Image (cartoon, rainbow, N blue to C red; front, top):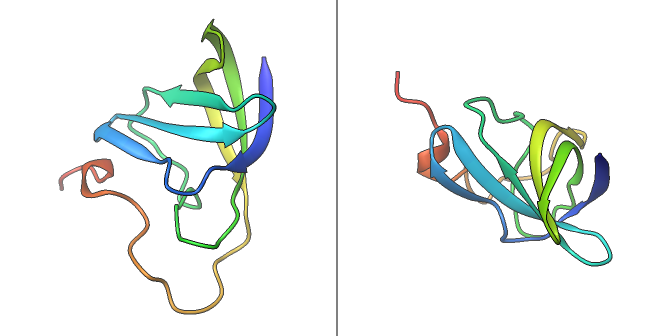
Length: 94
């Protein structure tokens, strides 16, 4: 199953360095869960900056997709960045 849509602002959450989730604005909205220690560098949740997400995986319930692949179609952010973009739990300790 493939899914494409806009990241809902404020929905990116990280449980730890290898588990994160986000909401994709589809009709109806879809919760995408990813159990991966690799997050796309362009996956950011900056206020007012649209990010187009492409996810592939399998449905695990109504409106819930377990992603096995996650990409973004987003060019680099122009202008001052309000934050690093990722919650601290998304970084793998050195």
